[in-house]
Image 1 (cartoon, helix red, strand yellow):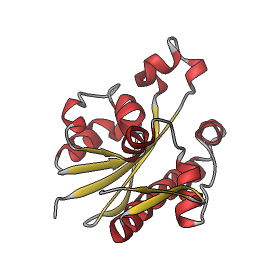
Image 2 (cartoon, one colour):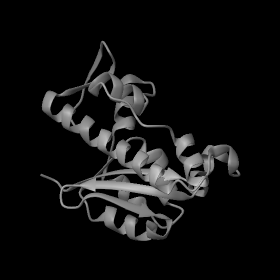
Image 3 (cartoon, helix red, strand yellow):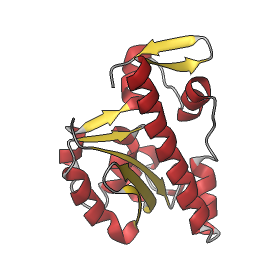
Image 4 (spheres, rainbow, N blue to C red):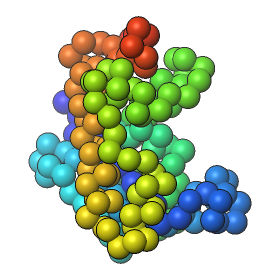
Length: 173
């Protein structure tokens, strides 16, 4: 079994606050990243930890994210080279988009597949970060990683996920 790590990041800024917006994700700034793997459980990483986080991610065989290839890796690229991460990537969002030819939100995937929900949004996380409620950002990010892990476990046990209550998508994650 390959060594896997799950990753989610939250940022300090939103797209409309940086020059170039969504074409300049690296300028959003890392607020918090959370990882989960079998050996270390949940770990929390802050901006000062970003180069160490990139190096840690490189040691794994697979990096599991939701929109990580477009977003999470781009945020981390502001702190060091991330090219090696892409070849190790299992991006659930990208995989589902290829299969469905449309975007699927983590919220809709979690609701339809697990009957659960996220604890906020990326915009909420930026607001909490700015208000100094760092622990709330950490808990939000940790929850997203937990949901990501649980979705993959579900998919591996059953061979599918749901993107809507009656819309099953076969996956081989």
